[in-house]
Length: 181
Image 1 (cartoon, one colour):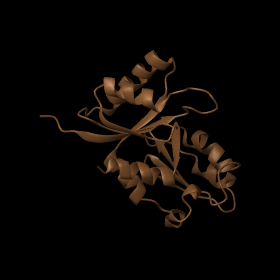
Image 2 (cartoon, rainbow, N blue to C red):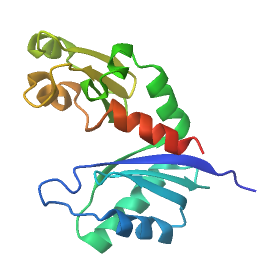
Image 3 (spheres, rainbow, N blue to C red):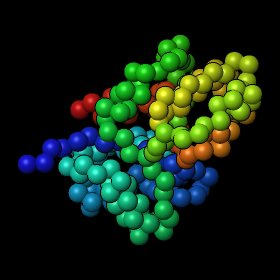
Image 4 (cartoon, rainbow, N blue to C red):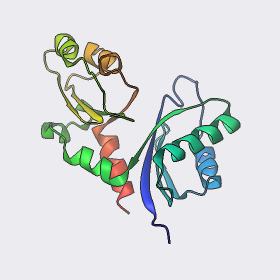
C-alpha cells in the first residue's frame, strides 16, 4: 500500500496583472483530475495544499505543468514542497521579530539550492534596515520597510542564479497550518 503525503505547490507569477490567469476553482478541478486529494487553495496567487500517493516530486510538477498548459495555454513555474519541508523552513526562521510584522519577512523558495550564489552582491545592494539569510533552498528576506522599492528584493533571483517564488510570513504560516491536517 502506498503512503499518502501532504504537498504544497507554490505557483509563480499567476493571476498577476491580468496575465497567466488561473482561477483557483479550475486549478482545483485540474489537480483533482490528476488524482490529487484534499486540495485546498489559499489566496489567488497559487498556494495549494494537497495529498498524493506520488513519491516523485519532479513527476508531480511535470503533471501539473502539462495539465495546466493543456487547459490554460501557459506553462506555470511551480515549486512543490512536502509539508515537513515547509515546517522546517518556518521553524528555521532567522528573524523571529518578523512574527509581529508578518509582511516584513519574505521566504523565497527554490526548486534546488543555488550552486554559486552571489551573496556579496546582495550585501552591497541591501537597504539599511534589510537583512537576509540563505538556508539551503530557502532565502529569507527581512525588510521592515517593505519590498516594493527594495533593490535587494529585485536582485535576489539574479544573485542566486535560480528561479524563486516568494511568500510573506503571513502566507507561509497560513499554508503551514493548512498542511498540518
